[in-house]
Length: 336
Image 1 (tube, rainbow, N blue to C red):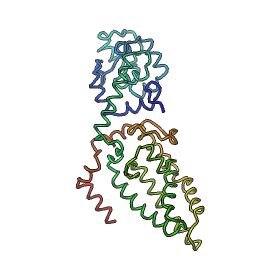
Image 2 (cartoon, rainbow, N blue to C red):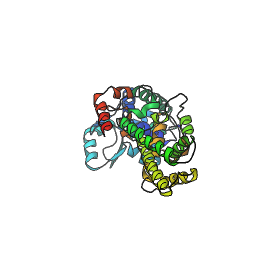
Image 3 (cartoon, rainbow, N blue to C red):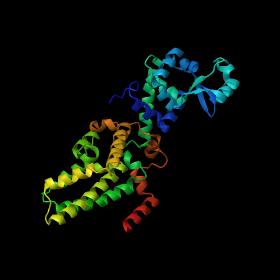
Image 4 (cartoon, rainbow, N blue to C red):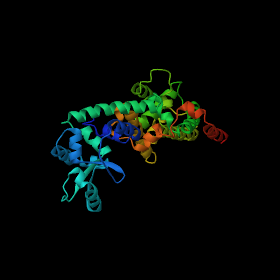
């Protein structure tokens, strides 16, 4: 997937949805605009001056990218808002007091325009600096460990604990009800991974560049761990029921068939789709890792995810393990 901001709407939106990066970008550029309705706004003439282009170029980009700009704050003032804007600002910014509407950008939509604008050297400079700022912010906020950024989610530890518990049920069921050698544990674990995110463990580790002894599941997001736990629990129960009904252990082919049926279950399908979207989108944004088999699931990362992994509630794993509130949660889970 192209990382060129002028062509990739997903990469653009990932930056614009990141409130921590936007704050630093705003401080760095400090574009001078007009205070209106609790934010700084910029007319087409002001934006043209900022970016070194003419207003006709801006109008062309609005025609081609109007929906995207609108999502990020560009709006057309009419009615009461227009009257207030004219009353207080029209003489200062020279937009013409007879205009029936006036288009204004906020900082976010100015940045959006600079990301797609190919005719401006100033816009090119802005894009380059923005990318540097975004990388710096993510590195600092994550403590420099984006590989384990998933662990900064406040729900990660409980999800990891639950998955560990269901993993034991799953491996015990493979031991007791499947007639295969020791390779069955890796074989059927990969079946779960392939059902959820279309990759086996080796592929996943290669994409995330896990060359050391890091556990694969230590890098997985809460939603993925929850889904793996659901698979493990459900498969363990089915193995037991099927084996007891037949009065013998299951063959590899019979066990494979149970996995295929589970993946196709309409009740779990929405959760698989959601896990694929979150994993593919977050890994591209936070880890710069592309899951080729999930490319069709990639979306821009919503602002809530930046809060989850970089915001006030996010902490490193060591910080959480030192937190008494977190430890009390584990005690309750252990006593169940």
